[in-house]
Length: 164
Image 1 (cartoon, one colour):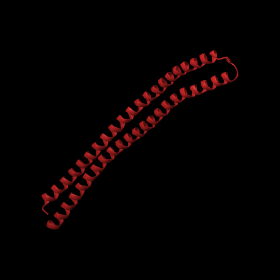
Image 2: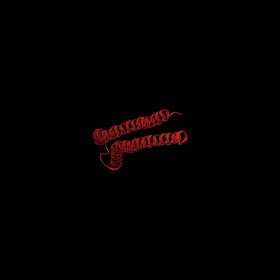
Image 3: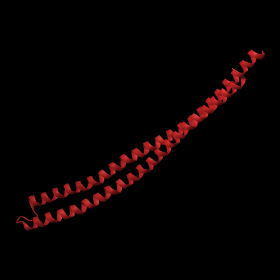
Image 4: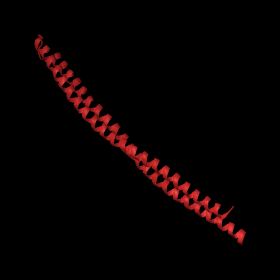
């Protein structure tokens, strides 16, 4: 192989290694940006889920007050009034309605927790993608250096064989 071809081959190999590394690095940086964006959106959605859970709890409590008011009015109209079984039934209804309100809050909290867990996972994936981008760049330069050294070695062997 002519010396010019040996040098050109080494240069092209080095350029190819750097170009491939840059493309892989750019892809990883894009994945990092997407993961960071998703983490931000998930965190915002978690806040919205928490707020919705609180709003649903308050709505449920308003409905509970109306239901309990209607039940108290019915008990007051009965001959038994607020004694014995009627009081027990009102207390049980109040407990059940309170559990409904608390379940609304809990549902919002659990949804928020899941979204925050997803946000943490997205952040981790972003970190990994950023580290991959750096590793690809480093590998590309190592590959380019390897190609250059290989080309230099081939050129030296050529010179030794032809001019030796």
